[in-house]
Image 1 (cartoon, one colour):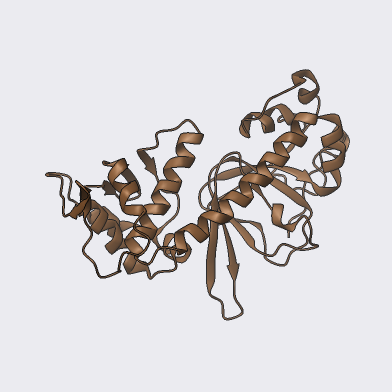
Image 2 (cartoon, helix red, strand yellow):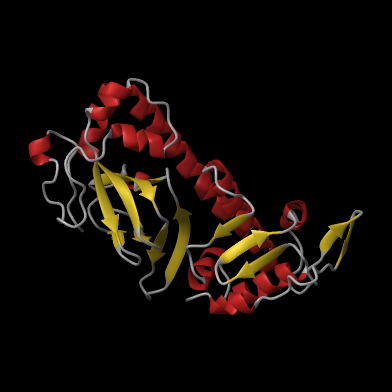
Length: 286
């Protein structure tokens, strides 16, 4: 596992970090980290005096390897990450996706090593806080302590999302719930909850939902044909948010049951003229 920068005095701010991955000392501070997390600044002057290292990653690059020594917490500054576990037979199970403001490596605080791996899905960056610095920073900056507690709580909430996804029987319902979760994250980040770009590919989505790759494409097509959304490559536009939410509540819907949209308490097939094209779905990379 790569070593990390420290948040201590400037002379050691870049110790052990690859030159191309670490921001210049004091280029980023606690104030930037708190901004990214949407937290109250408290004493902004004090926050500006605390340097925080930044690590930048390319798409596909690992932030943490499964089983590697857990040395730091990471706070997503930009981009998207996937958290995954690799079984002994080599199967990769995606457990979660993380975006700006979320904490990574929180589950390793009580361990000596990372129980999962973390990789960037696109060009991304994280704030790096060493485990050994957590107490010092919490004392110096109470706002960070509160933000860390909130981030930990959010991490637990995200883990419940997986249980919510897997509670649905039909793959279309699982996908509907996944898209609603993405929409909610976009809204929390003050971005459009109806139009967004998926950083993850078909293979990652299939792994998270526990279905085959081809099933993801069929599920996208079914939702599009029902007039609930429009997809072009990885760009998604939710056309009927209430309809999508209503369908997502159909926990026990059979997998072979025709996808329909709610109308007057009944489910009937719908379509949106001129918005049926789903060719872009098949272009999603594995």
